[in-house]
Amino acid sequence: MSDINKSTFKVSQMDCPSEEQMIRMKLESNPQIKYLDFDIPNRRLEVYHQGNAQEVNKALGELKLGEKLLGTEKVETPISEDETKQKKILWWVLYINFGFFVIEMTTGWISSSMGLIADSLDMLADSIVYALSLFAVGGAISRKKKVAKFSGYFQMALALLGFSEVVRRFLSSSETPLFQWMIIVSIFALIGNLVSLWLINKAKSKEAHMQASAIFTSNDIIVNGGVILAGVLVYFLDSKWPDLVIGGIVFAFVMRGAIRILKLSK
Image (cartoon, rainbow, N blue to C red; front, side, top):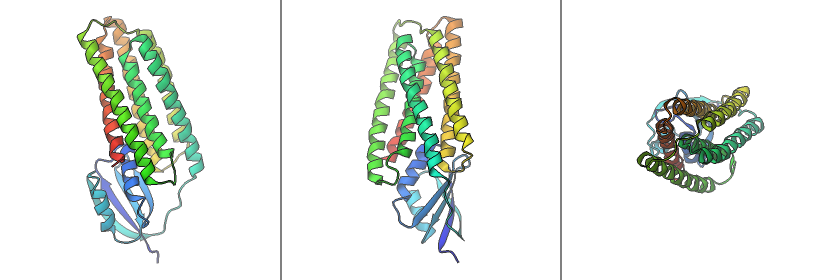
């Protein structure tokens, strides 16, 4: 009979890669933990481990993510999928996200569009999460936490600067953004995210980080659509307000992502 237990948990607040990373860094340093299988959409976690399930439950409880132990059974340790193929895909997704961060940040300032600037920071937030997943694989958890801490504070600072600029433009007679840049650049960013999603889905992976990446990229597509809509409204209304509204909304998402990344460093 196998000496490996599989404990299944319902984690109500596990809805993005940040929570997955928090759980990984909390549990993977424990030598009794052999394998973690995440189901982000259904907020379920399967922990393959030796020893008592209550120890795992206690460790998860310290993260305060609303965990609930559903059951434990004896099993064989699962064989993970081809990590080399997955890493190659994640590197491509990282390159696409970081590339569009640079493009949207640059064109956002040129066109005076807070929507593009905010979307660029959303792309940067994704890049940080993907980089954390790929950085120091098999290395020390402490090093990964330091990177997460730096990245979280850096992203939070950028989000605060973005909010302050949105408020300044609300209160001043700033110029109306160039809607052509907003629409064209966002369409290219949308295409980039669609390619990323295609690459991720092509892998047909059930691994957690791949599923989480698909969710993250799907959210980006929605944000891209929001910026395109804001550009259309700027054109029809000849007003800066649609751009500032969408910019403020996306900056809020960026700030939320920064807070989640900072949780990884604890």
